[in-house]
Image (cartoon, rainbow, N blue to C red; front, side):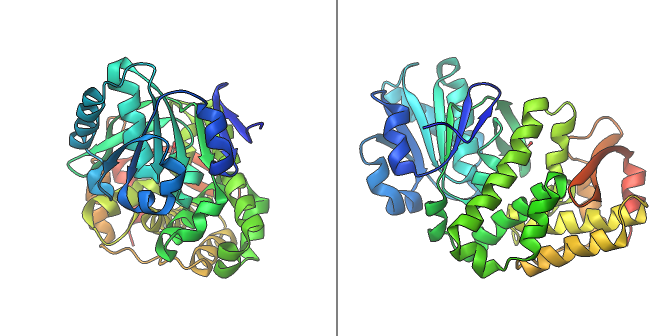
Length: 339
Ligand code: GLY
């Protein structure tokens, strides 16, 4: 089967059935699966033929301690450089597994089966692997492309509603960056339709992955345009750092709405387009109120790891389907976001 997308020449992304594809892709290699208890319960049959390492659930697991625990288990299992590491789960499992695979014995082949919408449309594609330090997101990590990523739309039917909506936030983000037609398609859809019509959801996933792949093709290491993928993320990371209330997708929805407001104040986005962005996010069930005062978020923004000296790169929408990266000072950020 041909991949739907090829990233950087050799990383294959499939939007297809994991059950059909997985045996073909791993063939007779020794496979160690990294997953969590929920995924194991849901997809036990799929991973039953392989050895397994279990990790806990949630963002708090994205630490170097978890990396070390997995490494110790791999040593105990006598895993060597020919072992294939397969993450089965959402973005947290794939971020950790990708990092382990990149450093265990200086690097193993690895792949992902992405079971969440957020993972399928963002985290699993593009080769970013990493863990958090003291709540600072992805402070330690690397760019290493997985051999394959399988995004199986059928797996999304078991997602809790909240996680589903979180994934939709990243899809909306991707369409604001680079797919005005899909944005319009989503404006005509309802949350229920997206949940129930697999063809529509697969189309939305494909659109978001396409936006991402095209950008990663030009700029794998985020020296330029890959920064566009961080639309809404400057404030989203600050929200996640300061509040346990919101998951990543929910925080991205708030961050995107706030940066759209800021873009209007900067005179680069029309009121009409800002209103469409807010309306679509609300229509798809997102809350756009920040759980914390903006001033508190802005204090965190100052510690953003993507800061360049006194500046940081802020992604601003200039139209539906078009964004720009602006290098702004911390003072400018404060002024732009001031309520
Ligand atoms: N999630 C943003 C990126 O992969 O660059």
